[in-house]
Amino acid sequence: MRDTTDRKNLFLLVQLRWLAVVGQIVTILIVHLQMGIRLPLLPMAAVIFVLIALNIASLIQIRRSASVSNTQLFLELLIDVWALTLQLYLSGGASNPFISLYLLQVALGAVLLEAWSAWALVLVATAGFTWLIGTHQPLPLPHAHEGELFSLHIQGMFICFVLAASLLVPFLTQINRNLRARDAYLAELRQRSMEEAHIVRMGLLASGAAHELGTPLATLSVILNDWRRMPLLMSDPDLSEEVAEMQNQIDRCKAIVSGILLSSGEARGEGTVRTTVKGFLDDLVQDWLSSRSPARFEYDNTVGPQERMIADLALKQVLFNVLDNALEASPGWIGVAALRQGDNLVVAVNDSGPGFDPAILEELGKPYRSTKKRPGSGLGLFLVVNVLRKLGGTVSAKNRAGGGATVTLTLPLAALSPGGSDGDD
Image: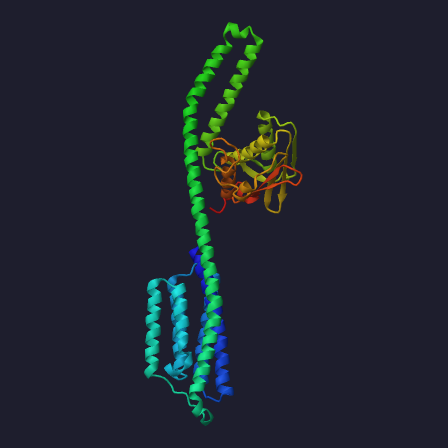
């Protein structure tokens, strides 16, 4: 982010230099042609051509390089100070009212540079000013202006003031905007880091709990198998059916525990199932419906069968969380629509429940933001948002006009493909 900000600032410096070049040309022409004060045009034009060449080189650097160092910015400003010193040397030295433009260079250095280089620029500008006091080419004033020296100096100071102020205000405003954008981005990164640290702790707890649950679940499974062979239970069909259902639920718990351990211990894409997006979503919906029972469920999957992907357990759990939340809010009806939009997969989960509270919509994805009055509530959407973000996707939610809510998951298909990347983090 710092590199990006420095590149933007260098580009602003290039723009400012273009304005300075135009300003120098206009000022030289006015003084030389309109006011009749003869200036050494060739040397002054040579300095302007150096600044133009520097700008072209800077633009090439911005396009070719992703980073801009403090040293580079320092050297650019040093060349600007050198060019200003030469122009002042050729046009009256320290008596030239444009001598105060040194302050413009110092102000830019104070904003753009690190402390040591900003002070070094101050020393260079001070040395240039001191040198110009005793060494310069005097201006040959025409006889018509010999009695107007003070008035000409005041006019030059006024033009210099207007020029410096006109350049500083937009330049510093844009620099401050760049710095604020950088600070906001860094704050967002810190927030993401805190959220991801929270997820890591949750993952460690879930993995530990899965290990701890393995033994009692295995014990319960053995006991139930023994019960099923007992004559008393075998003779009672109702009890046998209930014991069989208990065994099924324990097997399901064991499968969930195994899934937690698998997803926490395997790298994505290693040992996972390669399938299609359409097949993954169809199987996921069937698995979810096998253990949940909404009164009415509508499912529309228009994704083409040619889209390949990796069956990611984390993504499956994310969609399960969204569907579970929808079922809790709206047991009577849930609608799921999956489609492709451009290069993205879009999955919309609709319900006919009471909808989201406005405060929840404003802080969507923040942990423990929930209207449910129970410990640990509000983590579902938090995990959904973070997993989608790691895959380069987004999550949005809104209340439907006719009642209920819609949660929309958008994922780049490239992140789901076997050769895809895991987002931008």
